[in-house]
Amino acid sequence: MKDLLNGLKSSINRRSFMRKGLTAAGAATVGAGLLTHSSSALGQEGPEEHSGRLTKGDAAILRFLAAAEILETDFWVQYNELGGIQDSEVPGGSGIAAYTAALKVLDGDMDQYIHDNTEDEFTHQNFINAYLASKGADQVSLEQFRTLPGSSATGSSGKLRLTNLTQLTLDTSWWTRYRSRTKNPDLGDTLPQAIPTLAVGQHTAIPRTDDDLNDPNFLQAIANTAAFHFPTIEQGGNSLYPSLAQRVTHVEVLRVVLSIGPTETAHFQTWHDKAGNAPPLTAVDPVTGVSVTFPDLNSPPFGGEDFQTNLIMPEPCPFLSRKLPVCSIIRPTETKGAAKGALNFLTAMGLFIGQSPEFFAFLRDLAEDADEARRGRR
Ligand SMILES: [Fe+2]
Ligand SMILES: [Fe+2]
Image 1 (spheres, rainbow, N blue to C red):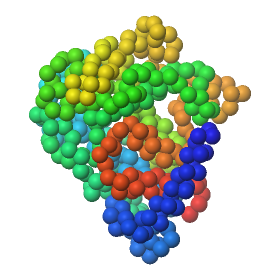
Image 2 (image 1 turned 90 degrees about the vertical axis):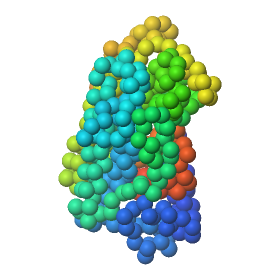
Image 3 (image 1 turned 60 degrees about the horizontal axis):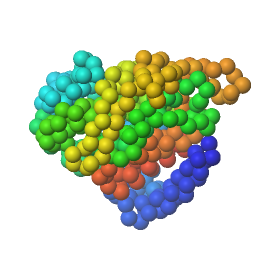
Image 4 (image 1 turned 90 degrees about the horizontal axis):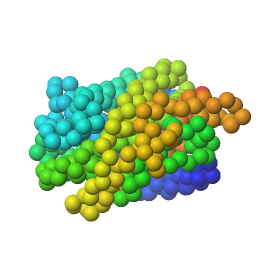
């Protein structure tokens, strides 16, 4: 809690600094990420987005969610190009047979699920942006930041990307968080990692080049990393929507947020189940020398309530107060600083390695505006 408050304070300081810096130097670049912005407010506040018939807070929350969905779409597209099903619903790429097969070691339907998750993210970003426009509010575009090379393996479309799937550091504590009956991060608790080696060093979740297909053990490690990246991301969305919903003003915007959020939960639940099927192995990345170990989560020192792979339903945990009875819930759902927290989570994951300072400034601005939203305030 103290960390969260400190984080908030420093984010406020950074905000005023950044807004000033923005006015002096970066306003044109950063503001260009939005379709339009008013130049009249540049003096004090930096670029001010139009909210149209929405409250300023509702528009800011939706714009941050649109950006998050654009980023989700970008990396799901990469997964679908290489390991999903490329068709008219989700076009792009031509697949890598060996990577797709390694993913299917976890479940024969992995390619279908990757395809469907990718399509869902497309519809989330498209809908939220179209809804903003329908209310006369500014939309979000990140196209100017599409600069990362992505995979050059045969099967990739070779398109430029917004996100980087080749240097991931994954926090897999959600695994134990959803199994714990006594701990909740909203009450200040921390939880152990399921795959400790994924939480250190940088790991690729996709074949970077055709050379990554040479060693079947390393290729399985790449597929296992992807399989843990999927629920790591989706549990984030699963918390982000209810966290932000608490500060929405209009009932229809609340309906939008409450209707999209639970599909992230559906994704998370599916991927949680599949990750448990990752075959135990140790592999060393031939390019970076980084080692990863996928332990048998059902055997000591793992196993038991906190690790057993078929315990995929959320265990009840303390909620709001330890004096109240435990409850099976989504957690965390703290609303203070939720957008900034989500951005920090994605950044710490390495998803944006290689992105420009302007990209981070733009996303930080969207997050800070979303975190300033207050229920009932115009
Ligand atoms: Fe989504
Ligand atoms: Fe998602």
